Image (cartoon, rainbow over all chains, first blue to last red; front, top):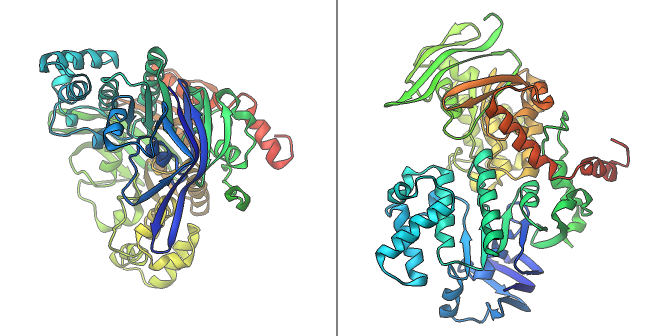
Length: 275
Length: 267
């Protein structure tokens, strides 16, 4: 299984002419953990969504190659895409409050995801759902399965989301800012959980975030995006060796407990980064 | 306590049967910057909302510059104490121009010279004057948060209540907003009470930090104690370890390499 993109572009037509949100990026991701880091508007989410062909209606996508395990995503039929989406490639979104169905219990949502992709009876699906909740380290899975999304905390909701994505046993998992809506302690727990599950199941993981240190902590390598382009690729342990001005800026504008300073560095954006 | 800008004693807040804040006490000196950290549900934002007068259902004693505060706040209170909210996408009126948003507190508090004050307020938060007649949706997140800060400052308050003012922003924008808050505090001698869950961010801005867990303040430490690891409560220890753990990912020594590369001087 591998995801390959060559010269991927995503363009939006606006009244002021076309805007290129993703500008010709190329990458290849196998069964490994890759982070994509950039600020809002850098095109990182669009890149991830391109793989599943889940772009907003007005977006135009072009690529010399965009494939998921050899399947040409740009040309594939809707039917073929539905066999990838959810089943072979899961997507975890930022805020469980918005991405879970508010009028369906957590267990039923997971069971639905299990049944759609694997078939089987309702009872089997429900048992599988409880089992999945246990796998995402929920202590009382049978009770949580009965609860509705508004009865769950943010961290718990995100675990339910992850359980739902794991139900069809995907080979590839895209996590789009999976912990940005959570607090620091829960954030670390969820990231650890995603990382462990990816390693255990041998899944490919694409982790999208604006938090460079967090991503590098949990990934093998990191792609840094700026204004629709990949400006730098780094091994996770080598953040300190970042060459590109943007990556260096991202690292140095973070407040740090161990290196206090009066004023934080501010990103000086240079025109040449846009080239 | 004398000389304290904001003095909170045994503050208790309950929602139905849930006791969200269970007897919190702290005091903030004039010009001091005080932080409240804890996970969601620990009661930190609840405290802030009660102090701001957004929730009248609380027990305990709150004094502003020595004067006890009642449940209902008068207009003078809102001139002296202002709040900046977490989400600049939600806290600005979408159908009002920036001009209108900034004029409102001035009209409410009977300030004259509205035109000049708005210009000065925009300048103070480094927004171009051209932004004045735009709508919030035409601004970026960082620009919106600057507008929210300008609106809070325009009535010339003494105390600013900051509810996770940077957690909805990109890290590069976060740095700009934190610097702005540092500068404004120095220029105006403001007193800050900041709530957050990111220990590094809160410690950057605040001199003293109270750590909350399950509605109680479990420990109050200085920023220096926190940096040096002089903390007692397991929850504080955990938060600190987490923050350092992530900072380490930036690479040991990596940071100094970076500043060398950028400025050409040894750190």
